[in-house]
Image 1: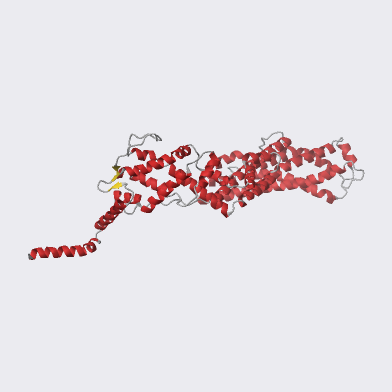
Image 2 (image 1 turned 90 degrees about the horizontal axis):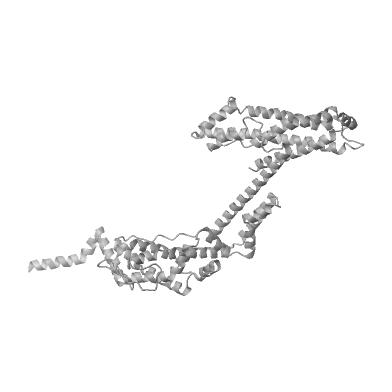
Length: 516
């Protein structure tokens, strides 16, 4: 009797304090938590799960089958539809005003390229900038919000309907055929472990759907974009209502937790919306900038070739030995800096050697040596420009020779370039050295251009007064005409034209260098 009373007392104490003692045991705590999850599943109005066998039941499959029937047409549509940037742009354009659409049309590559045939590059840049501003300011905060809402609807909807309902349902009825709704499938219970991964994937796309939104906006957009009905709005709203109910009940989370015995499982958070308009305008700016640069390069190359043919009769002009484009091959193979002004410096050397020292020297002998100027001051500027250009020709030769491999400067650059790939200090020294070399070339080109302009300006005045009975610069025109057998005026005209063409050629490279 005493023994029975003792057992009863122990049982009473265990009943009172058992929970307190068990709470310190993680496994016991987990079991109690799972037991509570099981109770929630059994009390749920959704009879999807059998606790004793850990099976998912036919009503679960029936839910997915009902959704599958409704979204199947949209699923087929999106399997053949681009859903990235093309559709993103279509959504943005859907909200554009007529003025914005007109501006956008003018920003296409074809339109800009077409305009380039009759419009200068500077004017094109100004027009493109104006159209981008028109497009940008048209997206006020209200319109941007509407675009982002529609884009979020579209992306979450496509992710949802792209879920593989068929492969999930085949686990419940292996005889089921894809998108065949003429016969009703017969679903059987399956082990929960076989569908848990599918359920997790489904929740990721289903819980990303905005629970409170007007889905008519999406349906109207697709209708205008593809001329098809995306889904019946009444049926789709029923799906949303059912998903909201399932989400509120936590039934899917409970099934996953109970089956996997993982109480910490959470559905991954949906991605936040992109800043669509900022990205769109930025890409448009990049696109148009690329087009304009291409046009500018093509126009420059075309103009350059035209001037080269006028001046030299060819586009292949190389006079230097070291400061040449072929020397850049060594640098470019190693992603190193390069000689940047090889073409214009070679053109300048060729012009000074092949033309200036012949035709311009011949002309200068007539007008600077034989000419009797009204005052020495009038000829000094032209004479100084002429001799400075002869001096620049010699300086270019010395500059080019200094870059030879057996000369200090050239040897140093070669040594640095061999080390630059693995030595940052060598790379920095090479960059500084090449920058200095290119700056020297640029100085020679700009000074030559300036001296040619000075020479040509005075020459233009001489051409204008050669037949003037009251000349203002030279007093012995008749003598010079006689000595030259009448060739002085045609020679002056020819030299002036050649100088004008060559300075125009140099100015292309000077402007490009200043803009870089």
